[in-house]
Image 1 (cartoon, rainbow, N blue to C red):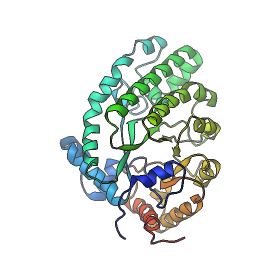
Image 2 (image 1 turned 90 degrees about the vertical axis):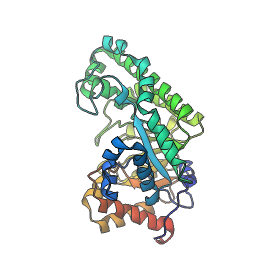
Image 3 (image 1 turned 30 degrees about the vertical axis):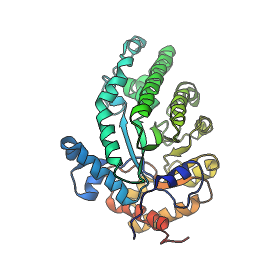
Image 4 (image 1 turned 180 degrees about the vertical axis):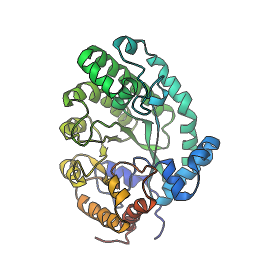
Length: 351
């Protein structure tokens, strides 16, 4: 099959909730460990010793696979002193209202860019060599995940019951932190980015992780600040959120998001998302990660083609995994999905 040359404008067309002439493909993330398996290079070792080579190999992998965009973000929580309760299962640094108020919130933006600025610059330099390929992402993680990384999920539940005023203050501080970091990123490091994104898992397969009213009150106003900053820079905004979040989807759409990513067949088939919301936002994903891990390449191909067929006529859409591509996804499963999508995109498969 002829190589598909990248053109980010097709992705922007989908983000505007229109069906472009060529369907885009989208991945929230492709883990370095997976790329190592796919290309036979020790990506994590290369990043530690030669990050410029790492970015060259990474960006080339995405381009060679036919993507119009490269997903790249660097997480905020690792720059928060003592954090790790969500990411690393460590003890939370904040457990009381007094500790929340004493925390060095104002120092974190400088810490974040000291940790990550050079990597954003290396990534931007590499992207300049790749024609019409563009980036999507930005500062990684989200409001709710950062709160959990600082107080833990159980700790947040206790605080909601015992110190509701401390919870209000905590989310206010994290909202200010995200607004400061995103404003600086958009000013200084956003050159290669055509789309920005926040990943913030608000639910699991049964329901949201905290009450919908608490999400509306504590989290969504902070999203709105970031969305407005991104839109003010002239870029669309994607929200990635795992879980059964139908109870708050109307509220999320009202914030002004341009697209939603993350789907799991156990919660609802992807067709539910495109049928409910495709008249208003672009929908990204479609293929459950379990499918990529457990089904045969032949079955994955058929499910991919069926997903594309069912998603046509429902506004903007880009095909990909409903979650991400971690290192344990079999290369055969991933490439079965990708090759089927690229058959459609190249015109070699006709519905």
